[in-house]
Length: 441
Image 1 (cartoon, rainbow, N blue to C red):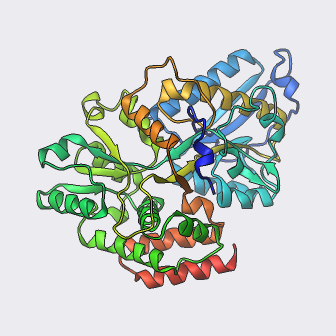
Image 2 (cartoon, rainbow, N blue to C red):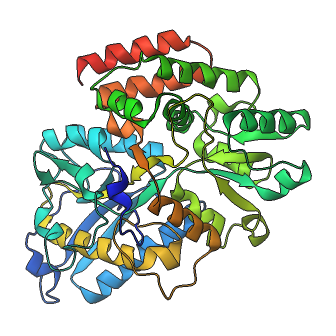
């Protein structure tokens, strides 16, 4: 997995993916040379990404900006976007892959998520542009490895993430709360907020990966990052006593009314709105949300000034380290192997990744996967502090549903929702994971 080697020498990084329309994505034409020749026939590149305007306004704006610049420099190229929300995107990708009708350029996640698409011959190798003049040596050490299958690179990451607990500083001040460092302090914070009628934590667990973050951090802090990594990689099982205890602690938090009402039936965006509307005091998510807390003009500055963060607290007697994070490379860009404009699509991806790294920090407030010199940039304090934490991380554990094999990941997500809904016991949670991981798919 990704450890400190990801963070050494880091300046900054970012993620992005491109857009897709709903049906067929094939288009006649062929060469990269055509992409830079204004007299060449018009080439349409179809892309799919997951940054709708609104709560992903800064990323959405940056995508359109890069596309506009590329089309201006390459008059024979037309980039057609298709934009979907996160879960809709994942479902659409599955549907399109079944008929080998992927967009020319799209977004993927790393490791276990990407592997079946690669094994199915759906993604094109991108080592030629990774090692080309524009991108060679540009990526933060350790970021591209998560996109390698059988010694070939099948996507290029555009962001690097860790997952802090964001909190509302005004709400904490109102109830004389200090940032919790230990898990017991965190639970006392939850009790105080709950007693005053404030939802302690915003959560939309219909999407399930959101609840997985809570389980993963508890597992990391109790059993240690090495134990958690072995379980998600499939080299050991989830019946380790520390991992079972982590599942039990999730249900303890549910019993304490830690999360907003109806959390298991709400999407992440719906859960997030509880934090944005100041109905909930805390929100655990990735640094991909930084734009909403720093640069997004659609979010009131008054609210952005209230947002702070803290590391997930340590558990007394646990094996975890407070500087260990859940995160890793975010989304990456792929090119469809079956694309009839494959070389033009690769040329665009090369350009996009480079430009995203240049502009994502100042324009969008996200952390890119490519090195960016920010020495002379004035950046939001929240951004600077989180970047510093990333640089000093002792360990970064990749998100479970991304690291695990596809079928095991699906079981994991289903069991997360069942665990939070108290439909299964911690022991059953572990047993279902063990069964899924043992299948090796």
